[in-house]
Image (cartoon, rainbow, N blue to C red):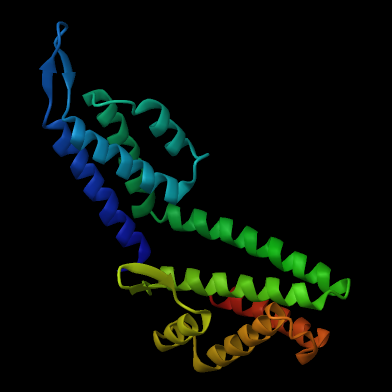
Length: 223
């Protein structure tokens, strides 16, 4: 199951929880105000906010509207929240969420690559190598998420990130890219690790330049 389908399953569960919560309506107080089960509302509210925050961030209108409008165990608040979740479901079903994240990622990658190019021109090969390598690793992790490959290992109840070499092997084995690309990625990651651990004499500026060109080509082709 790819990431969008996993998110869609979660959104549908929350919409179902909204419906179940609305089924608990009752009248209370002198004015016979309508309320829903408080415990179910709290579960629904916190789970929905967590999902929206992770998907869109705290500055997105979905998150701001939910945070400011869904304030208590009142049916109208639950209906407002359900409407937001339904909009999110539509975005996922039409591929808009993936497109948005891809555009943001592309912009971030471009900024990092431009920074690395500038550092190389200024003869700062070592930080340039780290930046290029880190950009490559993040791209590998995004490829995993896109292709339904886990980026973490479950170690006795704790999720620990897989190494870049591990996900490189898994992506190649899954056919996301070929063995030649895998070998190139391994070499680039090795150069990045040398830079990160201060082994500055074990590679040259020209090698970092070739790494930069290769990574840009790889990210462009395998997107």
